[in-house]
Amino acid sequence: MDAIKIEGLTRRFDDLIAVNKISFNVKQGEVFGFLGPNGAGKSTTLAMLSTLLEPSEGKAHVNGFDIKHRKDEVRKSIGMVFQDSTLDEELTAWENLDLHCRLYGVPGELRAKRILDLLKLVELEDRKDSLVKTFSGGMKRRLEIARGLLHEPSILFLDEPTLGLDPQTRNKLWDYIGKLNKNKGITIILTTHYMDEADKLADRIAIIDRGKVIALDSSANLKNKVGGDVINIETTDPEAVQKFVEKCKFCKEAKRHDGKVTISTDHAEKKIPELISLAEKNKVKIISVSINKPTLEDVFLYYTGKTIREQEASSIEHLRERRRMHSR
Amino acid sequence: MASATYILWLRSVKRYFRSRSRMFGSLAQPLFFFFALGFGLSNVVSTSNGSYTAFIAPGIIAMSVLFSSVFSGIQIIWDRQFGFLKETLVAPVSRISIMLGQTLGGATTSIIQGCLIFVLLLLIGSLKISFGILLAFLFMALIGLSFTAMGIAIASRIEDMEGFPLIMNFVIMPIFFLSGALFPLTNAPSALKVITYLNPLTYGVEGMRYALLGSSSINPLVCLSVLGGFGLLMVFLGAFLFNRIKA
Image (tube, rainbow over all chains, first blue to last red):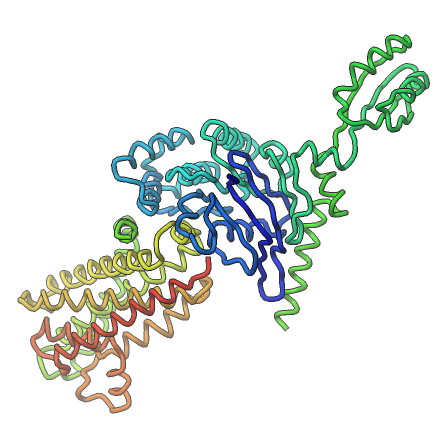
């Protein structure tokens, strides 16, 4: 069974189509990345999947339950970590978790143990009786992840989990998220506009832009579609290198410039041994070899014709335009 | 359902006891009114039974319950601003149970607030201990419940914090000043009388007056049924509007 099935899901706000007929499935146990610029429709999709927002059209099943008709079952199946904190800052960490347990009907005899286990998991057990308002941003996010897991959901939604966090905390959170998925087998859906985050965490990535899913695949496959890798060879005799490389089957193109040869190919890392042995055979000295692989940034550029930053700027401009029209 | 209501009630009560500044701050305002008006006007206003300070004492208690309950109700605006509201809205519990928890929590804290003022007025000597205290307690509970629910109803329709001063100036203040808390209804001009009779808090104030002073210009049974009916209406309205909140 798929963890999530989405068919033609659409959401309109007045004349704006925030999410436009998207369809895809998320497999059980995978980390699914939802990548796109701010305002692309990621959060709206998440809001619909978590039953906070009614879809205008289309269907979706979460953990086998219809999001329109079986809201409570959907809600019990998922853990939510929103973009902005939803903790009660005037309560302690423990009280926040206890409150969550009661809202989700976790039986009384299990509560204390589960709360303690999860606090240990996110390394906050020594702060359990501190008010949340004394926590740093990273601690709050960790506490929210722990809270999202209290009712043992089969799917965890993370909306921009590392937004606004420092690099160290981000790395740590990535570790937690990876571990959760591996050790507990939880399906994780995360939205992000950070390329590196999607690349590092997600098994498969859906790229969403202006309410539409424009590409969906593993990070490696997405990059391969965009075009091959590039191998740079620094050598004492570029001419000779270019000559033997051009004879290779795998080489799409070989160019020579200031003491270097650049080769376009696929799966570059597998071609290097062959290139080295060819160089030896031809008695050419190689000084260095490097590989350039396309990034998700290139993928985004390929599909939308814009970098994610440009797209963000233009969609914000678009929103401003709309607001101006409305305020008239 | 009961569990969700209970934990949200507990949250309100905990937050109340943790926020000492709010507790003492909201004691200061009614006491300020009491001293300024009570002693300032006691020689000017004539009341049928006893001193003017005793006359306004029940009204001052009602005021503190009113203020603290409306504030508890519109706590929802803060919960929305700081995100906590979403945590409750996405939980597998009915909106009604969330709303009831908030309402009962607000009613509880505003009764505590009213009791604190009551004790202070006892100490000052403006009120005396009698069996009427129990009845006064019932009226405090009804005022607390009704106006917390009203606060929730209003907050459910307000999107941001900017609506807050509006509520203060156009809801709470008129309700208080036009409730007969500060002036006897018997000698009031008829237009003012009509408005006052339409104000649900009037029945709370008059009920409290009967309970604590032994006489009132409105029959206490009328007070009880009007305020009870208003409370029920507000709980339904609050539940209905809260149910339609957009996350």
